[in-house]
Amino acid sequence: MSLQDSIPNNVDLGSDRKLMRALEKWQPNFLEWWRDMGPEGFQEDQIWLRTAISVDASGWAHYDYVKMPDYRWGIFLTPRDGERTIGFGDVSEEKVWDEVPGELRGMLRRIIVTQADTEPASVEQQRLLGKCAPSLYDLRNLFQVNVEEGRHLWAMVHLLHQYFGRDGREEAEALLERRSGDVDKPRILNTFNERTDEWLSFFMFAMFTDRDGKYQLSSLSESGFDPLARATQFMLTEEAFHLSVGEYGVDRAVQRAAEATVADSNDDARAQGAIDLVTIQKYINFWFSSAVELFGGEISSNAADYFAAGLKGRHHEQKKYEDHAALGEIYSMPIVEKGKLTSQEVPLRNAINEQLRDEYVADCERAVARWNKTIQKAGLTGVELSLPSRRFNRRMGIYAEYHFDPRGDLIDEATFEAKKDTWLPTAEDRAYVQSLMKPCYEPGKMASWIAAPRKGVKGKAIDFEYVKFTG
Ligand code: BYC
Ligand code: FE
Ligand code: FE
Image 1: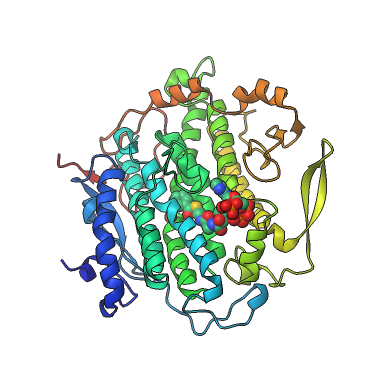
Image 2: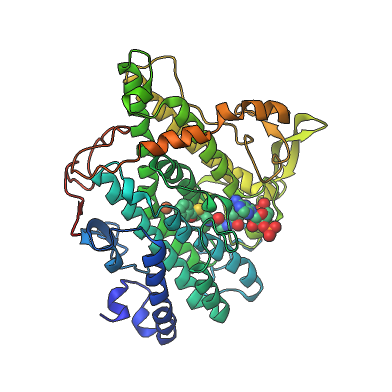
């Protein structure tokens, strides 16, 4: 099969010899990376996967059994919708760019490489999960997420190859060389070096970390660099599924926790083989505080520069905002001064990261409210999950040097240390969660710690054979 056949695309790959050659060199390295660092095992099994084969709203997704190494990682840009002008920053109303403006090359490359780096990183973090999947349905969803993160890497590598010359080719190689968690060659952003080798963490990751992806992609989807805007628009169509895997995965663990608590004479969910809600709360605290870092510093001149240059806007910039210059506006931000929380006025452009984080936090609050409904429905009263304050447990940004409790109140280090084990997963909690990670591969059956999903994938039954083992 020629490269052109094996890469579904709408970027007219066939007529661009130079791009073809670059991708032909990169593809075997990608496949080698996939074999080494992609899902461990299962490479010969038939997985019922969706593949993006076009960009039409109605027909882009094709579902069939496929072996993962044969997955067709395509390159798609959402089609142009007439002439578009840039919608924010100092370049508002200028026509969008089809090539990289020379003076923005460094900034753009950095944004694209940072975005790209997260995609293979997440696949590496999740590589052992197949061995302990709580059901066939979940196993299939994991692999769906993994192959699509692989495709997101292709999307960014296409941009690097087509628009950044030799630098771009070198960056594309480096993306296959860094490794999640590696001491010498770690992935760029911290969260992508955390261990994600049990399923509660995986669901938390898809809920909180992929959701950062949604907001970052969204703010790039109106970029003045049109190929980036159109690439990220198409990535967002896939991202929605990843977010649902996370949100409903946590929901099912919560449901089982609540039901088990009700069923147990001592209210002990663990005695029933479930994960208790206290532990789930600690995982929420950990993963939310880790993901919240991904929005960058609260006060960021990088973000101001990206915005001014028309490279990175805000979530729903056109739809939601009236003033696309964001000049002369003030953002009021809680800061610590003389040992007390007070507020500081920051020029809006320097607070773009924080504004995006606001949208993200509100979205996470919505999900937690849904989980609390699930607890109620299970008949458990007096227990609620909550999202910690964005100031809690931070390593970066303006809150990093202080300590806060999950409510966001300033506390001293001794208090934090004394309470830490009640707020964040302990080694014992992690060991307990790990002890539940037994594979459950019989169609329709679920592991002890998780409720069944409400429905299967794309109209299939929950007990559909989502993975056919050949080994
Ligand atoms: N870890 O001005 P600052 C996804 C660095 S997820 C380590 O505060 P800026 C996905 C920063 O580089 C979406 N370092 O921040 C999800 C800078 O370094 P220098 C990924 C960090 O630049 C699941 C310094 O700190 N996409 O798609 O405004 C599965 C101060 O920077 C971190 C993107 O991120 C961190 N967390 O904002 C699969 C979009 N945060 O200059 C996929 C592209 C900051 O001092 N990236 N630093 O050396 C960006 O737009 C920006 O780079 C960031 C950071 C928003 C990440
Ligand atoms: Fe992605
Ligand atoms: Fe994702």
